[in-house]
Length: 128
Image (cartoon, rainbow, N blue to C red):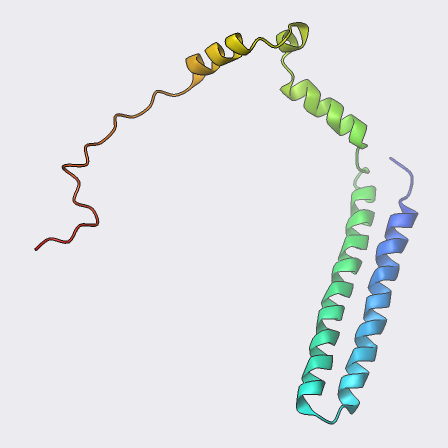
């Protein structure tokens, strides 16, 4: 298990807490506003800030959950595993030959379907 991701959890948690404080301030400004439109603008902004704060808290919980489930493999390990899956051992040994690559493409590509005659098709035409 990797080390505890304290910096990431704190960053997401503090960002969520800060957005929650901003949301409460905007809500308080909307409560004392005189004009209806101004109240709506402040309360709408407060709602958006609150949703963003919720997303930050969810991200902090996600980081904790992934750490508890065994951690996240490093980018180097992910790249290495992808290379093992998708690499062709013969391809790495030889140089790229454009003619051979085109020949392999032509052999592997699906055969094209027969083109349909436009004379028999009445799709989209108005009949009189």
